[in-house]
Image 1 (cartoon, rainbow, N blue to C red):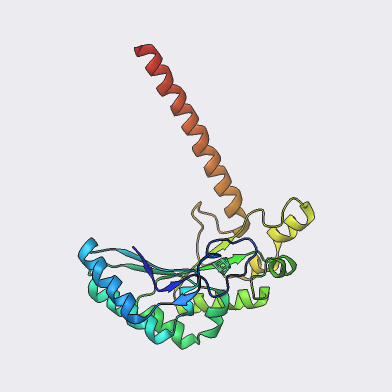
Image 2 (image 1 turned 120 degrees about the vertical axis):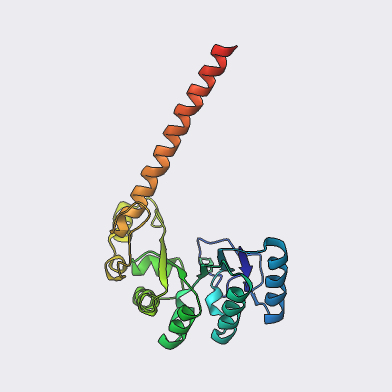
Length: 222
Ligand code: SF4
């Protein structure tokens, strides 16, 4: 279930992102969020996973966030995971104790858009933080015990091979903690993009083979 803790993105300035360009940023009031949780209870009965939206919902005041987490866990007995989009600036603005109490209250995973480890490129896409700040933010999440899930954008450097190489091999990849495996079972960040591409290509090939056999079977029946 997706719960709107905020509307839009407080930064809303990344050059590659059009997600919230037409949405005016606003933190929703606790009353609004509580009403949504009550309605969700009536509609869904119970949920296992909740995602706190929109972009960078971690920018919400920590006390309010803790209140929302407690209410969610009280309302849904089957709740196991609460995820959140976490902008690097919002992570850095929270103390270690605040992040730890969010973890204790049931915030299980934070999604951080690292985008690239190339300082020049990160600046160019107007992410709003330096590579070092990004690494510090990522490490703070890991230390708090909240799972960290990061996104690095494949192809962000465009067609320039040298820039792409820098993007792929850049320092933040080496400095961010290896908290776990990526979905394809590999520890190395650089592999994530390549393996995802391989998985997609495999899915397309399988799809084409199946379509071929279905068509053939149909023709034989006709
Ligand atoms: S911080 Fe995230 S949601 Fe906001 S503009 Fe950048 S990529 Fe988009």
